[in-house]
Length: 91
Image (cartoon, rainbow, N blue to C red):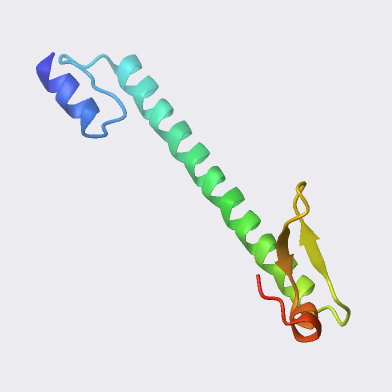
């Protein structure tokens, strides 16, 4: 039991006792694969968000007119380069 606890604390997905029962082994493999797929999906979504955020910022920044974004308290959250050139304000 101590080995199982140590293994799980070090990041193991599962711990199977000997003698190995094939059904238990298959379940453990299935759980590990499902966990890996979900992790990869989360990473993919995070990458898409980062890319879209970067594109949004680039489009905001290169707009030919003054643009700014305020938070709910009226504080500047983001300004584009035209806004900075005209007002001298940096965010």
